[in-house]
Amino acid sequence: MPVFLPTIIHEMGYSSISSQALSAPPYLFSFIIVLLTAYFSDRLRTRSVFICVHALSAAAGYALIAVAGAYELPSAYRYIGIYPAAAGFFSAIMLIITWTLNNQESDEGKGTGVAMLNVIGQCGPLLGTRLYPHRDAPYYVRGMAVCAGFMLLVCVLALVLRLVLGRENARRLGTGRAEREAQTDAEPLVGGAQRRRGRGQFLFML
Image 1 (cartoon, helix red, strand yellow):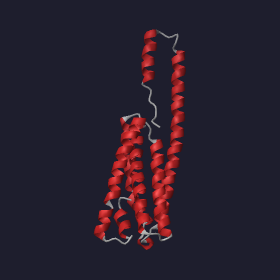
Image 2: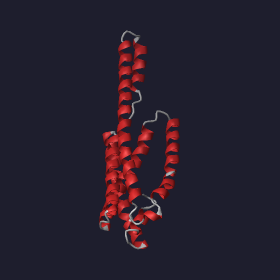
Image 3: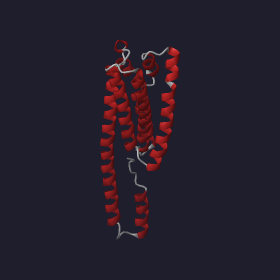
């Protein structure tokens, strides 16, 4: 999307200058949505719910662009579809990065996670050149449909990961509770130290 947005708008029939100008409002809209998403995601202490919402939003936007192109509907439909596609895409990326960092227990894990995300992210343009070949202009129906499918996959994977992490949190809480019950007859000072360690137990953000 970041690489091909001006090209996509240009293929709708607008001039190069107009396509550059028309690509700005979706970015501004996305910027506002990203800020709001970051704020409420932090307030509610959850990432997966917002990832699913934005992934579905992006999928709907991509699907609208694909359908409008397949049926040769007016360009306005495709341009409108760019807004949820861009906002959902950028918000999902932001949340995935922060979710990855939130769920690393060590600084080494955070560094490794950032490195892996950068490597995967740099593969995007390589895939994009094949999803939007010039022969598919001006509608790029196949590329838009594939992007819609991948955003749906993002939603599914986020839900699966939420379930996995939720079970792991429940297991850790259960283990910690059992350990505290087993320590009731222990030396008070020792038990106090162990309880303090238990309160610092790492739990995954959902």
